Image 1 (cartoon, helix red, strand yellow):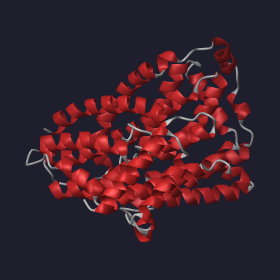
Image 2 (cartoon, helix red, strand yellow; image 1 turned 90 degrees about the vertical axis):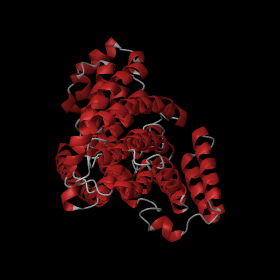
Image 3 (tube, helix red, strand yellow; image 1 turned 180 degrees about the horizontal axis):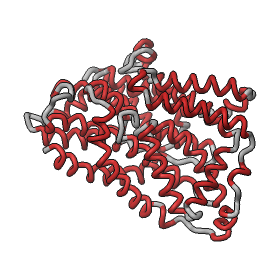
Image 4 (tube, helix red, strand yellow; image 1 turned 180 degrees about the vertical axis):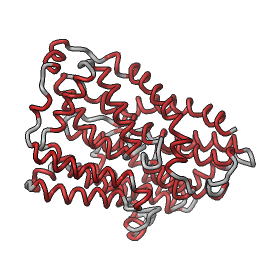
Length: 430
């Protein structure tokens, strides 16, 4: 590697250590790391702001920004309080039953929408629900973040890396459902069992709180029914736009921004009201992280790491698929899985070409890449976009999730789900 590449690795490693140890504000570290990448010549203005491979992913940034505004306006209607009480009553106000319900809702919604949008909508409900029940919200938020990554694996639109893979491999929405949905159903069942072992058995049930919640009337929490009706229509159109993305080719960020603009017009709220819920720190953290990882891509560091994984192939597609599966899980836990897949997918394309018409053993490389990258995103707090968003929401509401708290659970979940996926790839394609 060149001197600039080695310096870029040093900057990224230093920033990663600072983020992991939480000695400094993570947004400040990410922006400082981005500035250092520019200073050492690892990236430049055009590569930072305009390159799809090495720059800030504006689609992610503006998707988050638009959905944060929509969520902020929805909050003014009282609908999240309504959903919190409704969910608690459906689960008989039992803590672990509520966790299972939220896991299933999050996973299914992540498959139909995308995991980032889903956690933006579910997290406020969770915080209100836990407040009503006097329960610690962190276990619920951790479970939802990980469920969103598992559920999002099932479809083309569920997780951003899948969109990149579909574009490069020529795969359809149905291809993802047929190949990945079966194992995702199994992994969800396994994850619910893990949730019981990791968090559920320690959740205390308070009969008095439960009785009080069961006696509530959810409809009484709606404070602005007229605005809720208008916002429901806007949200339905936004979600329709996400689902039909493969047909309309309108970027999710554009759909979210159009929805946010319409919401602002119909709500007539003061800007301070809906901008209050925008997670500015999270957006800045993403921008800095994208620049740092993009610098590694620009210098060929991630490509070299990816090639080291695929060097095992030598005509043995079984070994290659398992190597890509496990290697992608490891690397996606270290760097965000979006830029990782953006770098790895051309290499898989070079090995086996487009997925259409490939023998199952060769096509397995594409599915191994999707499974490894999506599930590996659960390993750390910065492995997937949904994780970063959940941690930002938790911190803003006074329940910070440390890097290591997320990671100690995330590593277990990732290891177990990948171990379950290894035999699936073997049995399904070989």
